[in-house]
Length: 595
Picture (cartoon, rainbow, N blue to C red):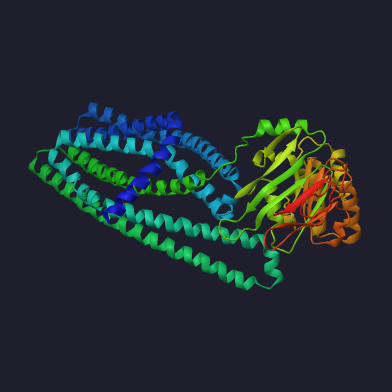
């Protein structure tokens, strides 16, 4: 148990070390909060002492002191109200700013992380961390250190006042401290456990809610409404159980501390009454004792409650730190990629050498020892059974996945560059699923080309056979696309995705089942328009439709063994490689073979 406690404390220490990195960043803001705390503490102590003199002046019928004390008490009370209002406003402004900055930073870290690492987390859980945990940490960064300082200062100041008048009273006021010290280990361990449970289950609720609402059409279509309501109730019931367990622990802890406070309070009250009975103190001093003993007990309890708060903040920090440890993409090859892009007047060659890939949760290679060379102007069809890594190959091209063996490189102008996040600027992409965003059609298109004019948008929509739809819509390009594109047909969404890829105007275009939702005639017109745009553009097309193959210069199949076999080679050009062997020379336009 001691070893576990040491490990837990070491973990919390690491988390707070990470938090202190942000505390340093906002040190001036935190200093301002500390100054606010000092002023508040001085006002509180001054108010208590002024009340003593006021009561004594009443008992002694000293009008001069009575007037001065009354003015002091009233002035300090009004000043406390005004100062509280001012500090609350400043707190709201600063907390919002700091919260947004932290949220923006963590969101940026998550969205910049490697794609396969982000996929480990459910999007609902990521939102839970970006919102709930970041808010907890932001509050801790701004408020925790000032709270520790101001409450400690108030406690010391009040204790000094009591010591000045009566040392026994000071000892009585500290009766609860041994209990807090002895129970701290149990409290830290329990609070950590409950915080983790509550946050994890809250993530489950958010994940289930988000996923079910996104797929409400499927739920309704299969008449699963009642089933999903029951499942949602089960998830929320789990959250309720965990939350109530935590609340029960919190209530019991608060009750014990409150009872202890009552004991301490009555001990102080009894001692004060005894000293007043002896005539050793005045009524004003008795009033001061009652005020300060309550304040001391309250302040000590507040200091003790900072420990659970520190654990809770550290728990949230640990969950965020987990995200910040993800490997991030940093566009490291940006300069070389831009230079290569400028030099590629005649397009790019895309070459793979001994390419092998497997997913982290699988021992099987989905691509194994694959070699190929795709040349500018080629229209390469990649076919194969469902699940045979066609989309995986495109994700490797886009640098979303990394090979476990071999490499993929771009070649242009006598230079070459390995595939990475920097080479995504060489691609335009039509995904298998219609990934469009809520907003207008124009917004979705301009996402890849912000400076595009209306005639540019209409040009690509015309090629994608979507111009007629736009012209018939009252809103035109401002026609809104709902969440998940539910207010448009799959064919319309697919054609908008194609138009968006065309507007990108990249030297390599990836089409992943891009016409699967189109009828035969529309597919023919779209393909003829798209594939005849640029003689130097390389097209790589995954498809299950035989009709698409007629537009391709070469066809290769990914087998169940992860190997690439060329079924229809490209025509030989300029006598290069002059052979037609499907596993060796594939002609001047393409050379694809599997080992």
